[in-house]
Image 1 (cartoon, one colour):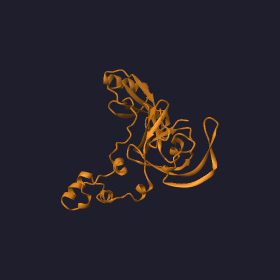
Image 2 (tube, one colour):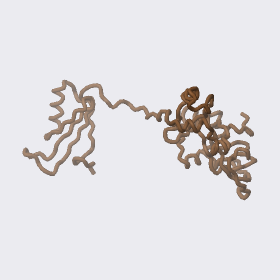
Image 3 (cartoon, helix red, strand yellow):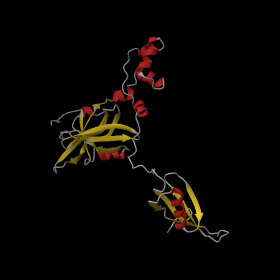
Image 4 (spheres, helix red, strand yellow):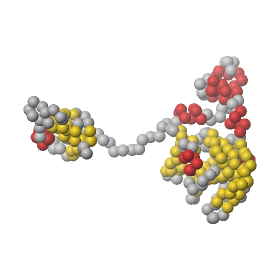
Length: 267
């Protein structure tokens, strides 16, 4: 696998303390710094000649800004520190050989596992594209509440905005965030039961004032099938037997909620 001087390939490294690159042309902002060194995994040390920011356009169209990237000419690979991305609020996950970084519900970058490395392909986004890259098409796209490219072409055909005719729009981060589905919840076994008395939640609660019959405790029963809840005073066993006789079924599972007094956990 040949990765030397490949500007579009970045290795996502969970053990790297900083972002590193050997290419001076990748930086959008840069300041010289020849007073520091970086220690490598083979116990060697390489001199840092500069620090700056690098802007990348990932495969999802997101403009990922890497801050305080170290310029180390002697390294052979472009490295992205997973720890630094975590510090900047990005969330990382690994599944089926793919590492994903997201911010909120938006997936901003993907890195695929090749041999033992997670490689992310991204294009260098120059400073002028980031700062002054709002051309006529992008300005009208934002002004028209992020209208689609096809809709803008129709307006251009009607001579309403002729300057955007045949304009090709770049991927819009805000549009991607609005159209992307949220991360699904983890699959869990269904909690709803299929028959009466398969699962009943029960608890014995105590009240400070006795009833007219002299009872100071009451039992709560919650059926998971019918969602029916009942509260009765008296022995719990008699109420359970009564429910079994009415439903014609035998109670399979009874879970106690663990509340000693009404509304407060038992100590």
